[in-house]
Length: 228
Image: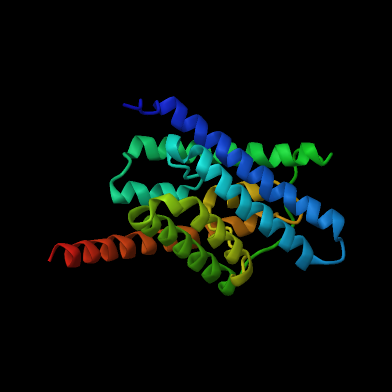
């Protein structure tokens, strides 16, 4: 019988996983911008590939330990689903926030950037907020439904969804309050100005709530039809 991970191991997994995620998001953005200073499309492509790929790896690494949330919206979904308790959820959210900021600092350090920055990149307006709600709805739905019906494919499904989300959403699919919070501290390709953060986070939480209740309904309907 395998031993269950301790609470400490779960929290550390969320910190380290989110740290590596943000180091990849910000670092690949800096690399893309450095190599293609005149082409945002190429910079975004580099950012996209690296982020989608690292998500697959991180979920395979840390999924068996903490569930590999790395995202308060995902943690909220599993709290509402009843898979984790409130204390665990709150601890995860703090760990994700700390890890996210640490990841930004690591990315800055790797690229010889000033460690502490404040973004000047404005991301605001109805289309961007709507895009974030859709992006988060899709991400949370992907996780909840694939976990239920094809759990072995979660890592690949999430990585592919975010890879697509970078391109089909007007906001480039942040879909993560911890990521959004931390990206205000980088004045690089991946940044978001602090004044733009609150509306993004609200939109993400709305999308996460809608996805959670939709998926719970859909799962119940599927189970009822199977048992009938």
